Each structure stands twice: as C-alpha cells, then as structure tokens.
Length: 617
View 1 (tube, rainbow, N blue to C red):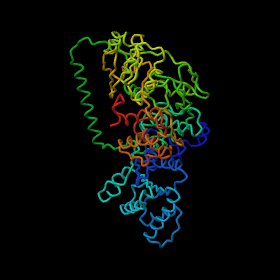
View 2 (view 1 turned 45 degrees about the vertical axis):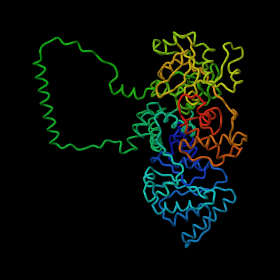
View 3 (view 1 turned 180 degrees about the vertical axis):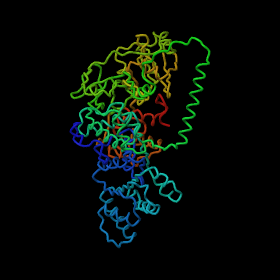
View 4 (view 1 turned 60 degrees about the vertical axis):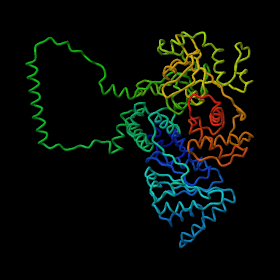
C-alpha cells in the first residue's frame, strides 16, 4: 500500500527470515564468528541462544548461504518431535532411504553408514535444530548419541542448537550434563542498542530500494523505546508506522506516527482503564473541598508583605525539555568520512580529498561505528529538513579545541616545550624498543628504524590507537602550539603520558580534546614479516602464525586449531582469524594484517612487546 508512496520496491520490514535483510550488528558478527569457527573446528555441539525476535533464524539462514559446497546440512525447524521422528527427519533431510517400520537402531545404522560414506569423500555433515528449547529430555539424549558417530580422529556429525534462553536452562540439568560437556561453542544474541537503530532501519530501507532516510531522529528514539531493541518488534512497529505516515500523507515518519502504531500493535502498551467506584470519587471530591478551604484560609491570614513580582516564563515545559534531552545528539568533530545516502561509512577521506561519486561527506565522530546514520542536531520532524539535499563538504573545517589550558597536562606542556620536539620524542619512543636513534637525523626516522627491524604505523583515530595497543606519539594542542607526547598506558577513563621527562596522568576526555588526530606508533614485525595474508595464500610463516592464533583462542576459552603444520591459508584458518579478531575487538576481515600481527606479537613475545594495556592474559 505504501511502497510506491515512499519509493520502495518491497516491504522493508517483513518478519520473514530473509538473509538479504540481515543487519550485522556487533553482536550478530560475534555470533556468526562463533558459529562458523565452531563448525570449522569439528566440535560436537554449538549453541546459539537469544530472546524471541533477535534474529537467530535469520542468522542461521545466512550461515547456510555461506557454507562451502562440501557441507551437507540437515535442518529441523519443528523441534516438537519424539526420538523416532528425529531420526526419520534427519534421514529425510540427508536423503537417506528408509522404511516406516524401521526401528531406531535401524535408522541410526543407516545414518552412520551415510556419514561414513560422506567422510570418505571429504564431506562434512551438519545438523541444525531451530527452536531447540522445545526438545524433550529423551530427544536431547538421542541427539547426544548421534555425536557418538565418529572415526578415530573426528566426529562425523556436528550439531547446532538454536533456541530461546530456556535452552540454556534445559542444558544445565544434571541428567543432561553429558550433552552440556560436549558444547564447544555457545553465544547469546542480545537486542540492538539505541546507537544501532539508525543503521538497522536505514539498512533495511536501502535493501528495499529507498533512496533517502524516512524515519526522523525522534521516531527512531521512540522506536527503540517501544521495542526494547528487539529486531522483530522493530520490524512490526516500523511497518505500521510507515502505514500511519502514509495515511496522513506525511513525507517522513515522525515520533507521533510511531506512537500511534505502538498503540495499535502492542496491546500491553495501552494503559488499562480501571473503573473507580462512586464512593471513592465522592471521598476525593470532599477531600478536595477541604484542601481548597484550607488554602483560602492560609491566603487571607498570611502576613502582608510585599511579594516579588511574578516572572513570566515562556520557555519549554519540563516534559518538553526532557524529550528534547532524550533526542539530542552531540556529534564530535574528529575526522571526515564519506557516507552514502543512508549514513553508512564507505571511505575514510584524507584532508582535502574529494568524496567518491554518489556519496556525501559529513563530519563524524570516530566513536560512531560504520553503518550508523549520523543525523544533525536539528528538529528533524520538519519534513522539509529531511528532503533538502545537503551540500557536500570536501574540506575539513578548522579544528576547534576545547580544554582547560591550565590543567596539569597543560602546565607540563608549557614548561617542557624544548622537550616535546620531533627528534626528542622519537628518540624516547625508540628507546622503548631498544633502538638508540641519533640526536641528528638526516634520513626520515622511519627509514632509520627499519634498519633495526622496527616499522612505523600512522594513527588517525582513537579507536585505531586502542586496536594497535602500542605506546604512541601523539601531537597535542596547547594554546595554539603543537607538542609531541608519548602515551604509554591506558586505563578505562585515564591515560599516562610522557611529557619530556615527566609522567602526567590525564583523563581520556582531555587527551582526546587536545589531540590533532595525528600520531605514530612502532612495532617489530619479526620473523613472520608484515605481508597481508588471506584465504587462498600460501606462506612458510603460516605454521608459526597458526600456533599464535591457537594460543590467542585458548586464552579466550574458545576451541583451538588442530593443524599447525599447513602452509596454506584455508577456510578453517580464515574462520579462526575472524574469531580472534572479533574476540579481541579488532576489525574482523579474516585477513592477517597489521592489527592481527600486532596482537600475535603480544601472544608470542609479551615481555619484549610494549603495550598500552594488557589484553592477552
């Protein structure tokens, strides 16, 4: 009904588990990493839980599309079955012929023969059971017996159980402890955060063919408040909100449309009307009259003193102010990124660099994750403000610094100006890597460092600094003068920096407010080198890297790798790398690049690797 009106090719908020509409939030990425990595390592059971409507089934469908061709899948959607029906369904899914009167043993033998034949052909078999919280104790025990089908080196069948949180309660029963002990990977999928709603809604709109944002900022806030971030509830409510806006011929969906849809969709959101007995009404009326009489008596008997003139107030009401505070967005100017029409970051831009065709550049905070729609701090319920095309910005604005210049760090910078120069600071950081740089440098510093086996890495964002996790030289501002300091320790809300020869404690907020987004850190590639490796590559360094990846996994209580001798970057290694990157909050691209090498150095040589914080225990 509203598709043509909003320029859509199909309904963007259908509740069908379409993998094309799967929005990969951070939790969905972590869940996918656990699933794919658990499968690659040949574990018995993988358990994925989550509240109703969080996207478990959609994630499962996406997993099926990503599995290699040599994987056979048996998918059970109806978990309300008995043991006999379970074995028959597995046979149906794997195309194993059987007769209706066949006993459970007979069915189990046929499944075992089929799995052995697949194993001989280097094929892998996976059983996926959705809504697994409905499985009875006897069926779960039968599923455990299926995992006894194995060779001397590996299991013939891997099983993924997907269900609601009650599944964890079921597996914690004492009589199912044998099954619980075989779970090699588990993940609980949570709801979307408020900061992810923009990306989720606009991603689905873009897949459906929309070319401009439709939901205002206030509408998105109301959408999250009404749904608690549950994707299925968001879909249902957003669909009805679009219909409400269409019925009013509004160009955008505002908060009123979402509230109207909430009353229509979610019955529990309506306040129940209770009938007040007449006797109680009469009592309240009498009490009101008494209070009025008391107030009048106090008014006429109070001392006659000049009262201050009343002050007229024309500002917003307290309720309006609270609503405004809830919906306000503060975007901190840190760097320039190119985004498409739905606010998804597609490229980082250097100062002065023009945006690619078809995108608009906006100022964004480095703390805002890619995929988040950044909306200006304006009353976006005004339709024309959304429809107007913003002028592209191709040059970053002049950076405005806001900090207390008289703070401890500011005083240290003022009194150490002669020690915060380029050469002095580079020499100090080089000493942390046992490199003695000369006091007079003719060649570029990074070229001199390479002679000692140390490389430079540029840093332009706070998130990048944290992922690199190495002491770094940062260029800070103090009263329009630039100073170089070394940040060598990070805590949750504070940092320690070296200013000349003085150690200064500084809050993260002050450090970020002074930083010009210009920095550099050092690292030592070692014997593994620094070549970027990805699936399909071969390298003599991969056996050593496999050992380090395995150690990193074990430190996070994740299943380890089983093959340490291969020099090929295969699918299982790619999944292991992605799992490590996700577990340690790196960019999860399944490739071994700078960030992953930096982490592996911490695993291999913790005593010889200076770090900002201990992330590998």
